[in-house]
Amino acid sequence: MSDAPRPGFLRALAPCFTRALHTFLAGRKAVVLVLILAVPPLLALPISARPEETRSEAVVAVLVFLYLGFLLPVVGLLFGSGIVLDELGSGALPYLFTRPSPRSALFFGKWAAALLLGAAGLSASLAGFLQLAKAPPPGEQFVRHAFLAVLAAYPAYLSLFALLGAFTRWALLGGFFYAFGLEGFLGTIPGMVRRITVLFYARSLLGEFPAKRFDVEFIFGPDGPATRATSLLVLGGALVVFLAAGAVFLSFRQFTPRNTGRE
Amino acid sequence: MSEPPIRAERLSRFYGDVIGLMDVTIDVPPGITGLLGKNGAGKSSFLRVAAGEIRPSQGHLTIFGTPPFANAAVHRRTGYAPEGDRFFPEARAGDFLVHLLRLSGYVRREARRRAAAALEEVGLPTVFRKRLAACSRGMRQRVKIASAMAHDPDLLLLDEPLSGLDPLARREAQDLIRRRAERGATVLVSSHVLHEVEHLTRNILLVNRGRIAAAGDVSEIRALLSRFPRRIRIECADPKRLGALLLAEEGLTALRFEEGALVAETDAADRVYAALPGLVAGHGIEVTGIESPDDRLETVYDLLVGGGAE
Image (cartoon, rainbow over the protein chains, first blue to last red):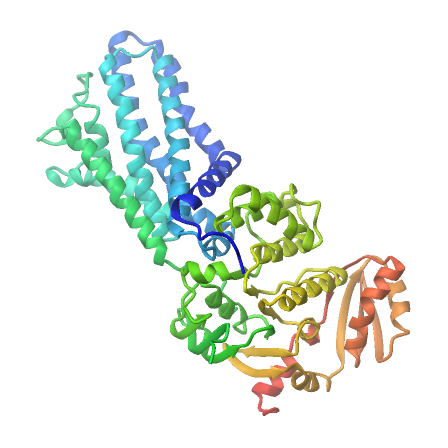
């Protein structure tokens, strides 16, 4: 009989993290990540040629709409939805789930690798964008808040889409619907309903926009943005809840092979 | 009385409207048991439930007395090689085994040692650093078998492990499975080819349409099958030369040549199967595939299901 010690969560976490990191870096997702994160630095070149007043507005627009409104959910979805589904698609899941290590270790290990890569990529892209756009015309504090917003909201998106991936094979579609249908829709409904979106708290972390052309009431509603503390608390809470729910759900989930008629 | 390694009681598994297994009650004893059935009969469903990959829809299945689904204690004692050969495409063969062994609790150094030993045991000592995507189907099958055995489990669940192997590799894999059983492991091995299982064990379970159609000694099944002449299709580099060699075998009733293959019709398939490894090895003929459409038990099923046998 196997003489190995029973693998606990921490013991199984390291190989899952390492393998996920290697797989992400060697796979197509890394290429997609580089390509989409290269867009803002490229946009920075024409922005840098603008006069200072309009440059400020352009920098804020890229942060609010491109980073927070598009890149964050897309990178979160790219990595998060695949935490379980990539393994299912590659045929690896039966091998992994019939080992004595906790399934949650696989989930957390891949999540941690996706967090590291996504956060590193987003930070590098943002730094490159700000550097090339000759920012900070909006102010140094705003730039710090931009990094905070990106790095606090990305884990929340990642966890949400990881949960979705543990829940359904249609996570990619569901994630796109959430990010670009539901958030965009709920985010513009007047009243409190926009406060159930990740996007609201991500934008709230930017604080008051230093560019006057942006209608703060349109983006945040009549009550304005949430406080920074509230935003961090909500995003952190969402991360914990989504991640815990994903890990617990995965522990009980069975994945029926797709080709099964009777095999 | 001690619990059998695998016990199924009124076990059913449904996939929506499709029946995977239906009301299966069976004890799988220690030693090697062949799980026979044509494609879609329910073999893989039984193995998936036994490996804890999926749960029963109704009834119970226990491994060493406990349900296997998400059960670490069972997974420690079980080695499972699922069907199919598409897995970890980006990984190297050795890394794949090391990863699984680490998930079985081994530290990196011991996992590497065991992975190398397992690859050597399945006859692939040089593929440790070869990408699985670049391996032949036969190689991947053997890596898969190695992954199931590398942690020395008490129970081996092998889903079509001989599929895709050439005759020599098939013989080696059969020897390997036998050796594991001799060392005390219980083995449940599935196949849709009767003679593959016959070389491993006398004890078989015959599955049809999700039910156990027959259980027991292979000779009873064999007797049913021997009433019919069978075709064996052999893909090889030199069909005519192999055909000339096969003509010396007893029971050969016809030979037909196709492009890159020959089809032998025989009423003594056992002799042909027994002679093949020696012929191809002795004369250096490269065989890339072998199949027997008539071995796939349709004839036996027709008898069993049609009421031709008790």
